[in-house]
Image (cartoon, rainbow, N blue to C red; front, side, top):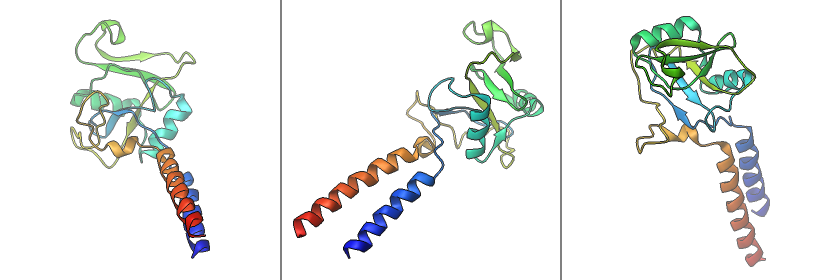
Length: 173
């Protein structure tokens, strides 16, 4: 019994470490499959990290053509993000001095070695607007917030259970 429990807990700990570790702090509604996403915090993704994060979300970095289509359908952000081809863009329909210096349209930025967010494309979601997977950290409406939980929490939880089982077995012995 003791060995079975040890094997079970060890197996759970090992499998929790092999899961995807994507941490998503915010995700916009998608427009014809295109959505803006930030990693664990604002502007913390290199191009390669952005590409990897999109893949972990069963998506890919969007192309400029896909960004243009999403913009036509209403996607607007106030954040620069990576698109395929190592480009950075921000999408604005309304002028705001805090967003792209008040410019409107699809504003492109030359990569400058800094980290940004990402624009991902989900080929299975071609609805004009879909907010089912939206994660808004500044709102009580977090959508599917379980996407924002990294496997690190699972490891911590399993460690707590391990301590509990160890204590129980030490009392029994």
